[in-house]
Length: 90
Image 1 (cartoon, rainbow, N blue to C red):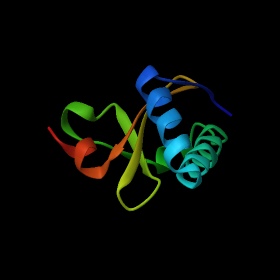
Image 2: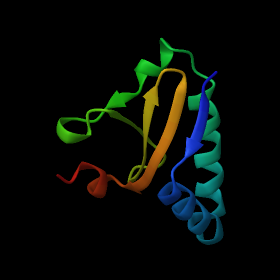
Image 3: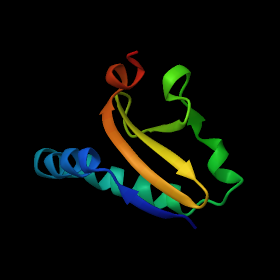
């Protein structure tokens, strides 16, 4: 199991989503629990982004909503919640 933290942007977006769409907010919380319960090997099952964002991994919450996170030596930093288009912009 990994230790984790949420970036300030992530917290702000999650708080806003919790008010606007509690179902999606619960889905995000479940996904966070799923991700942090992985081990060092199975965490690699999440896809890395490319180019300038290659240090980040991503997971879809809905067809259009994506969580990005960074894994470093037993620690996960959840960086952002954004639409698919925003995540893949260069």
